[in-house]
Image 1 (cartoon, each protein chain N blue to C red):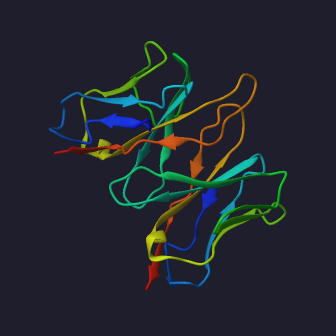
Image 2 (cartoon, rainbow over the protein chains, first blue to last red):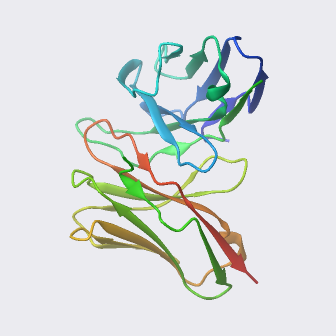
Length: 117
Length: 112
């Protein structure tokens, strides 16, 4: 399977605990995006990477959230001191942006569903 | 302030007929529009897209129409099939970062 993969698919945690999610993009894709989706809403942009550089962060990404893409391949999203409001589906997407151009088509993984109790 | 709006939460269509899903946007800087389909417990799947320099793009049973003056786009599915039953999201983008702004989705049910 050469699509975007995410791990774990489901995570249940207690309020105050830290959680980390992993995303493996399509191998040749240089851009990687994180989105969050809550019930009845569309996905909302959190942050994105061009290779290993984190280039944009949404105001939705509070100080408790941190994302990395250490070697320009897989990415991790960590949430510290989780709150019940963090319960959502966390989606990862990747795209291939040729030099000097924007690639709009993004390919999504299956998501990680986080439940904070 | 919702920049991409899908005002119909749901749509029910008979198999074989046309499905028309609508989307409105407010930001005139958007220059690319996409439709995604989402089944339960899966991530969104890219369906079709259109650049703002075009007014129509067709791919098999799927056609997207863009009316820039009205800031409106629509997705036509002809003929509709039961397997098309899913939530459809309209998304828009503008600027170099390429992040997508999504609507809230329309749940399409195609009845046999």
